[in-house]
Structures are given as C-alpha cells and as structure tokens.
Image 1: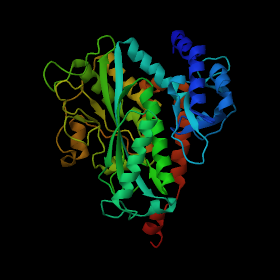
Image 2: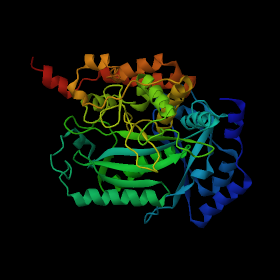
Image 3: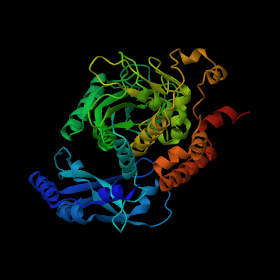
Image 4: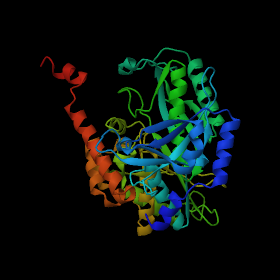
Length: 455
C-alpha cells in the first residue's frame, strides 16, 4: 500500500457528512448503532454504541481490542480503532417492542490513524484501487445458496427428507414466506437484492445480488448473511451457509459473476469483437485465476466442510477448468445477450468465505493474469465425469485441493495470492486455519465408530 492510498483511507470524515449522518439517525429515532467489522476468518463482529456517541465516533473512531480480528486465535492485545464508513449507514427494520437501531461498516485503524494491515475491508479496498489505477472498473453479481432448516441445531445431523418442501417436514408456504421476508428486509435496508427461489436441495434456497462495484458488494454479502440468519431465527428456523451440510443433498456455493469495464468509458472489456467472443483481457483474467486456483482455495473455500462440497461434484468444481456450458467448471462464461455486459463466473467460492478477502484474492489473481498477458488452455465443455483424473490432468485440468490442509499448503506456496492479502493477514490466516485443520484431524466422528467400532 503506498502513501497516497494510506492518506485516502485514513482521511477524516468531513463535518458535513458527519452532521448529515447524525441528523438522519435522530430523525429515524435510532437508539443503538452497531459498528461492524470483519475478522480474518470470515465472521462479522459488532460493537454496539448508544446513538449519543455516534458523532464523536464518526469524528474520532472507537477504540477496541484488536485481537478480535484474529479469527478465534487470541494472541495479543492490540489497541485499535474502528472508524465508521458513513456511506454504509443503514437503518434496520423496526421490530415491535425493540429499540430502533442502525449499522455502520468500519475501517480498522492503528493508534496513529493509519490503516491496520489485518483489516480485510482495507485489503479489498487496496486491491480495488490497484485495479482502478490500471483503468479497470471491477463489478460483481452474486448467487448465494443456503439451507433453511428446523430450528434445533441437533437436527442438522439428520438426513433431509426427499420432498421438495425441505427435510423439516413443513410446507412450501413457510419457505416462501421466509424468503419473502428476507427479500423485503434487504430491500428496506438498501441492499441491491435480486430474486430468490428454492434450489435443488430440500430446503435449499438461492438469493441473488445485483452487480455492484467497490467495497459495496462485500458489505452487502455480510448484510445478506446476517439478514437471512435473523429472519430464519425469528420464524423458529435455522439458516446455514455450510457448503455441504448433508452427505446426500447438494452443496451450497456462492458464485461470483465478474465484470470488467473501462473506468474511463464504461466499455465492456471482456467482450470480444463478435457475439459471445472473449477479448484478450478476458482470456488473461481467466488464465490468472486458473493459475492461482489452488493458491486461492484456502481463501475462497475456507472451511473443512468446503472440500466436502467440492469433492461431491453436483455442479461444484473439482478441477481447474473453464467452460461456457459445464457447471462443474472452476470458471464458466455464460452466454451474454446483445447489450448485456459479459460475465466471468467464478464457481468455486462458498458463502462461509470472508467476502473481502475472497474478492481481493480473485481480483488480485485476475490482475496478475492481465499483467502477464497469460493465455488459458481451451475451454472444456464436456461432462467432466466422463474423464478420470489422469486424463483431465493430461488435458491441462489439474485437481483443486481436496482438503483444507492441501489448500493451506498451496496458499503458503503462492507468493502472488499471499502478496495480495499482505503478510499480516496471510500469516494469521495460516495460523488460524492450520489450527482448525489440526483440530479436525484429531476429532473422532460417529462415522468412525460405525465403521470401525466392531471390527
């Protein structure tokens, strides 16, 4: 991060913007404000202040214990400061008998007012500025899949029923009503939400977010996850973003639909000279993401459970391929109608990833491919199940990591992806996730008792 970027990020909020935000909170009857930030592991953290502290928090920030950013590994106390981003001020829908509240996403700063290198939001902002400096406007649309389940966590161990309504044996009206409330709540909060529908798994849902640029899309992913969980909980249900909650049901991904336009003219830089043809820039972007697919995996697919989704197939990628039709590919390029911008769909990520880091890694890999002018192998549109792994390897389609442990080793070897995230986040991510992988490998599961208990 150069000094210009640091000065821009840590510049104080103007008095006019502060006054406007405070006035809006007052007119809306806000009593509490949640200051939100992201930990390295992908979870959202929040510190709640009474509204009378809003003005001074916007002016000076709010001090907090920065060890909360480590993702569960408490190594050292760090005096850091949350500096709210006023552009993210959102009023939560009112609930009868509850105080009105709002939320603000925050930057994390050091005591000297400079950005903290462990802030995932600032990391994405830095990579977005690199793209802008190269003349690129990078935008994302999102398809987010998740399951709505019975409210009891113990029921998650049950296999789903085979009916379309969902394994918890309630009617489609409950699912549809829950989706409706989720959509209405997100719309009220200003999230650029699209449609939502029942997915292929019993109780599985999909919700789409319209294309957005800048830091906004990652903020909206965080807000969407929170809203889905809250609405389900209020209805006595449970939402899970686990990539593979059931062995015998489809997994859940978070597909990123990437667009790249000229920052100056708005021209689609991915479309080639003829319909459904790709530009050289698009090919280079694809090549960069394929080259760093294994190195990105620990960031895009960040849990032990993520690799059970990838291993199971059902439109989840197992190999580093790209295609125009095949939904089991790492990257897919959907057909684009005339006048519609070209999308390059990244199908590997799941919704448990830290969206700031996942988008930063994806964009960083794309920029690396564009800088190097790399060319990808040809698209592989055949059904991948017709090939064995050795044949796919000969075709230039290596396997993605099959476990979190393999993904972490690939991440440790990928200098480009680690440089995108920075030394601090890379080291913390490795420490947190290696500890998680070690804990998982030591765990004795019911499957092992069933398999080996009487042998």
